Each structure stands twice: as structure tokens, then as C-alpha cells.
Length: 133
Image 1 (tube, rainbow, N blue to C red):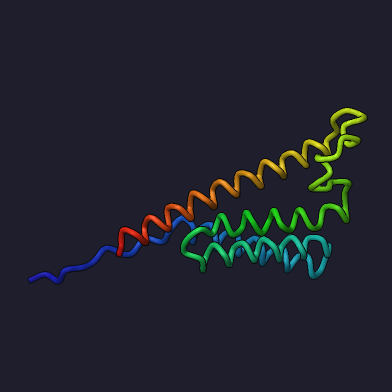
Image 2: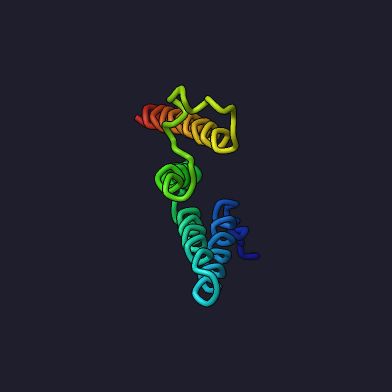
């Protein structure tokens, strides 16, 4: 009788993306050590995103999304004129709309989108737990 062979287990798309991000991040870190320090920091972030994609089974996109938004909200006031809560002040619109204001609105849109997706994922997770019981 022939032996029954199992088909090889397919690797998930998330892990493939994680390995690609990890490789690009490692390459950027290596280049950053010898060339431009800014590339080193960007490479560390991409490397971290790759590790999250490889090792986190569920909601890796949400983790990376929230981490990116938090980093962006904390660091952009130091390097640009973008302030997360400045859109709430009336004098902010005195000279019309600028690129900084458009980016701030995009940050708010990303925040609300991440909140919505997180709530939907939490509801889906909760309904899955109730069905198991």
C-alpha cells in the first residue's frame, strides 16, 4: 500500500509580508549603520513591523496601525507644524487650508478608522467567545 502523504502546509500571506518587511528592515539597518542614521531608524521601525507580522497571529495590522499613529502623533510636533488637536482651534483656519491641516485631518480620519476597525474586531472576538461556550 502506498503511504498517505499530507500536502505541505502553506505559509500565510501575513508571514510572507512579515519576512519581506524583516528583510527590508534589516537591509535598511545595515545601510544605516554605515551611511545615513535616518535610514537606521526607519529600518528599525520596518524591522519591528516585520517581527509583529511574523509572530502575531491575529490583528497584526491593528497593532501596527495603532503603533504608527501613536508614533506619528507623538513625534510630528517636534519635527513639523502638525499638531493633533490644533484642528479644534478656530484661529487655525484663519489663513485658509494648508498641507499641514490636510495631514492633520488625515490623522484624525486614521484615528477614527482604527477605532471603528478595533471595535468591529473586538465585537467579532467577543461573539466568537460566546459561541464557544
